[in-house]
Length: 236
Image (cartoon, rainbow, N blue to C red; front, side, top):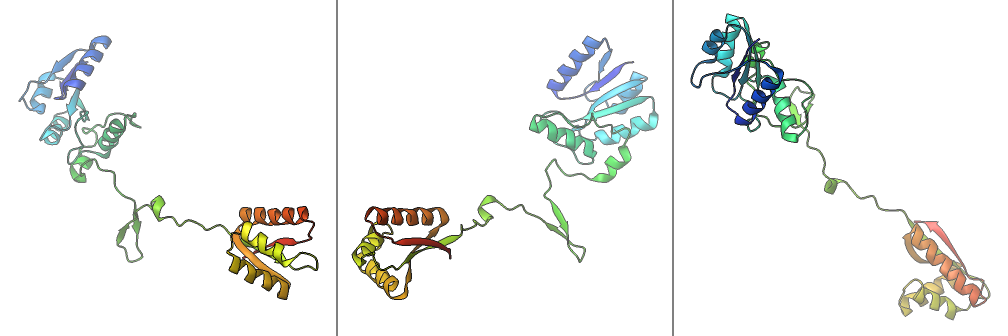
């Protein structure tokens, strides 16, 4: 069975010609400027491979289908986009080729689906955005959120509490507040007096890991100085 090749893309024309030679299939090139319907009648039967980016090609495919005897297989060249009226199968194949992957199905067959192709009025091969139906029937475009729009969740904070006792000196508590919790002398003295008068005071507020480290450091220094100073954590 002969194959009529109506393809303007030189890359695909050469590949199809090489494949036909390997398979021993007779191949006939459609004369330039000759209508597809006329070239199909001259073929007398077989298959026509058609470049769908040629102007007016869908009208010629309808004529071939009406005449019968020749099956038409259409596709797009590697530089072409889907023309107006081309079936959705062509769009999927063109998009897959642009991504460098294999299309999920074979070449589209306009001769088998000419009516749907003619009525579709397809646009160019552009990936549509997601749509959402509104309650009133209107359609809204759903735009995906970017990473910058995602809110960063703040880690939970903990208070480091210093507890009063009858043995730890005020001078040592002042020293811890300055050297461990980075308070100034005036702020450290004010917190120390609050601990002394109320029994407990807040040395600082930090994320859990930092608060735990400072509390442990405080008690280690107190044990080295032989003081029973107690530091605990409490959620903010």
